[in-house]
Length: 85
Image (cartoon, rainbow, N blue to C red; front, side, top):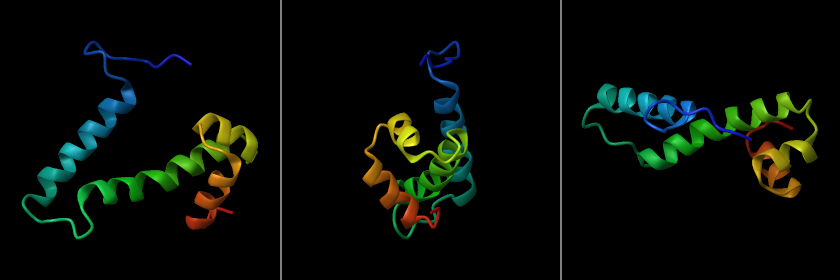
């Protein structure tokens, strides 16, 4: 699968994440994240990623797991953790 890149060589997804994180940092200023910014971003991104990939693959866990590059058991565990089963 080819990734669409902008003039800077960065993917559209990379650019979107950069803009969103930059905006979030401006919004919170010096206010610390209780669990840390990394944990917050991972927590916020994983559920919609799983939901969209599952939707794209008509809820076929095997195909979704391949697309995500994880095994099906790991996918099921993550889906359950996010209440997506």
